[in-house]
Image (cartoon, rainbow over all chains, first blue to last red; front, side, top):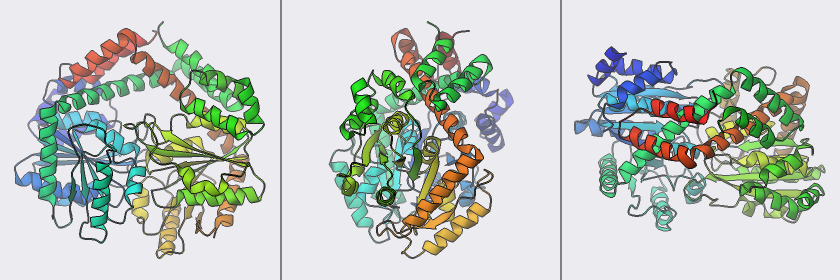
Length: 314
Length: 314
């Protein structure tokens, strides 16, 4: 383990990949690994990238990698695949779209399966992020699929959340419905060479101006990109940089990182408690409770209260 | 409370609405209410309706209500609005689209805010569903926004999950990416009068045939609808009825209801444990742990282990 951590810190892709695999497999060594990594920096700029299927998330991620590499940054990417609790694995590898970066030693790309039990964002993403931070990447991009809850989780894991839209994917009301206005720090209207890009950008700006976003001191900018040609990517990077500067100056960066740590600790606590519910005598009591509730013999609150009483210290 | 329950069981819309509000507000009386309701029937057919923004979920829900009313069923609808943890409330009321049913006493429609902490599906949906079941609705439709995690939760709450797609909203790969293939019991290609409907239905069938869906004994049908005109709604209702018959014959209905009860009990247990983490001395310890983890002074597993040790009986 110590050798793997040393290798990862020296930037060896194979060792980084092994550590991420340990994390993703839920290895029993994860707690030890996290203890080893805790002391090793969390200086990476973490950017979440999200939006509906088809808006061009992978293409934009790829264009951002190219632009970040051009200014010398080392870039890690975690691409979180669709939630699939039934198959327990990823259906697609986003890596396929990013082969142009495959031979670049300054880039590490990892497709992660979302297991669904903590939402669209893989439950192991915070730990994988720690691995990439400890490995010294300057920027980590977390790309997630989906609308709604996934965005909220990206906002929780990233310093800056970039929300992508595309013309014709739905109007402003749909954007509001999907809950994206509240979580975006920076918005990009991708495929901006298509009809309707102006309208989409205008509607977005109008909704932002309406103050749906309550946070003070930062008005999310709306930039236009054509990720497939690289058009507008420099402007997007500028917007991301400006948000970073605001985060640092306002103290919000520290606040977000404490909240992220809080969520991570809570998730580990709740996972431990779920494991207790699923083992030994408690598991048998839980099974009986579920059957009784389904049959209408008892209500869920009474059943839950009895389980909590058995689980918790008074 | 007893009077409200009696009123709801007698079908008085105002009393049903009050009970759902109690549930949605997280009233301290909810456990007592659930005890009162436990004995009163859970015979409703529960159908989840989901799909990406813009596929026509509300229009389809409205068309299904009309068709179900024509055969004499009483219909309850829970429309779960977008996850909005920042505003804590719904941005839109789906009721607006369903005004044609507003004066029908056999229909009860309720827009619910998703609070985000348990995913796209409102955390209080299972309890609201109990209210509608106890009120004797024959069918309860749960409409949710979003792709990904939301679908998974609909699949957990409903007996039958209907997934809507529309031509041009993305090809089969996008559908797979969004994780919808695994959760749909019935698929409808809505807006089937548009270009590309054939291709979308064909791709869906091909992907279903590829066996992405592991469950034995039921091959999800793909029907075509134009919900705005009512075209294909009878065929959709037939498909939903056939799935219902299969659920009963195969014993899967009982299995799903026990799993639903299990999820409901677990959610209440975890919510109770989170409340303990957020109060008294544990809360102070939790705050310190989050700050220490963010600063790299301790790792999240060690911090979580200490909290679990304080929380749980040995």
